[in-house]
Length: 78
Image (tube, rainbow, N blue to C red; front, side):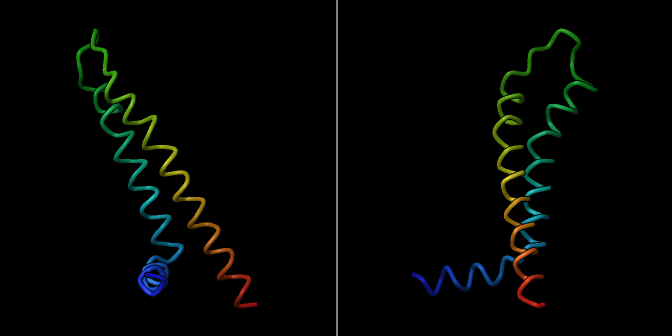
C-alpha cells in the first residue's frame, strides 16, 4: 500500500491539486449561480446551496494542498 500512495502522490503534482480544487469549486458553485440567473424568481434552491457549502471548502482544501506542495517543491530546489 505505501508504494501505491507514493506513486499517487508523485502523479498528483501541486498544479494538479490546484486545478482539481478550482474544478471542484466551480462544479459546486456553478449550479447555484446558474439557478440565480435563469431560475424562477421565487425558487428556493436548498440542495444547490448545500452542494456549494460542501464543495467550496473542499476546493479550498485542495488549493491549499496544491500551494503547499508547490512551495515545498520550490524550497527543495533551492
